[in-house]
Image 1 (cartoon, rainbow, N blue to C red):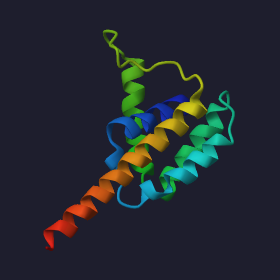
Image 2: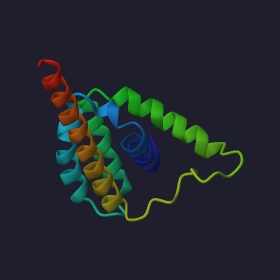
Image 3: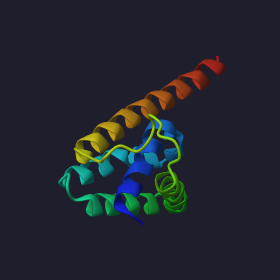
Image 4: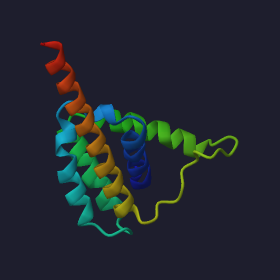
Length: 123
């Protein structure tokens, strides 16, 4: 799999489908963020490998392969240009770390809201 497509597919999950990380994988997002922070921006392959290994550990490996294949098809046959066309990967470690942090916070808030909803239901 091509590193840029792995990174792009993972970013799409963070922004468009964070629920894919539920219920336990999202708790490990800070660890992934820390591992990515150790890489330089021009090291796409190590970043992609870190993401791939993390996904495999959290039983998301197959979903990642499917997302990458879909991403590859969109890039190889882009059709008409759209605003959602993949942008060049620059400053990728910062983008990934920020995206992971934002998604993690949203997932925590969602979990807290769900927990408070069940607390209210029992009254």
